[in-house]
Image (cartoon, rainbow, N blue to C red; front, side):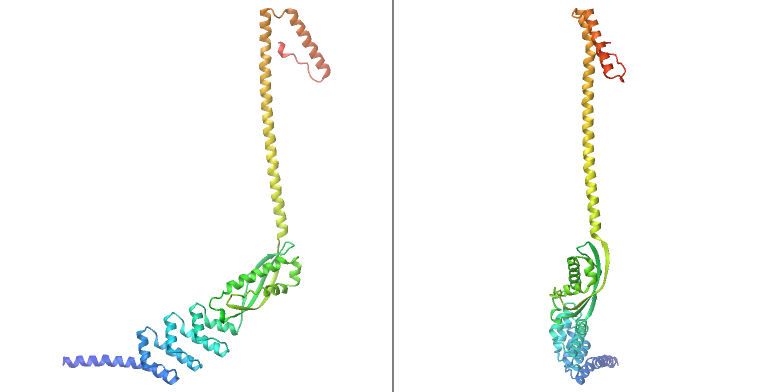
Length: 329
């Protein structure tokens, strides 16, 4: 009885495995067979061991066959194992075939593995995309600032999607062209009167070289007048010159003040020496009296001469009060 139970369990497990096998692998094989995809049963089984989802590969193969595109099953498996998006590549190939765009599977796989959306690239080749640049500010030769916004119509270039620059490069080049064109204008009025000159000059530069896109047109959406940069620069320059002149004047004033203080110090030093010398006069006269070198009559004569000198000074300058001779006190 126990042996029978074990056999029944084994039979049940085998039956479940066969049912799963029938609904998964055999079902996919029949689906591919009736669709004309021609995917072998053993190939479907071995996909599981290669860690490739059989359902994804078979459905992608059927999608390609129904669209009239013949792609080897191994190519689909290798692209999946390389980390690519198999369904996206097949959809891109179908869209390119319907639009009469030459897009081989290897190129589409390379574009997908490069990190670009290959289906979006094909759609952009059919329906061009409009990219709006941010506000670009530039100054004309008359010093007036202009702010421009442009719309760039681009179409994807399938041949340059691998290794070509993206939208950021297009925007940077267009912005550079706008700045150059506005900067070369003599007056800002020329740009305001003919804004199409900006797009014409920018288009002549061949800005789409080396990029993954082809520029179809550049249209100026809006041009606004900004600041008077020239006047602001002149004002700033005048203010800077004023500050420099003030600094130089302050430096000269400080030097003059320093020289004045130095002269005052010298005058004070000379006055101190004069006072010191005058203080020695009475002492010398006393010593002359003691030694007999100076008599009383000589002293009176000196006093008369000093008084006569003060009188003459008073007559010459009547507004000055008569000052006694401090040296003779």
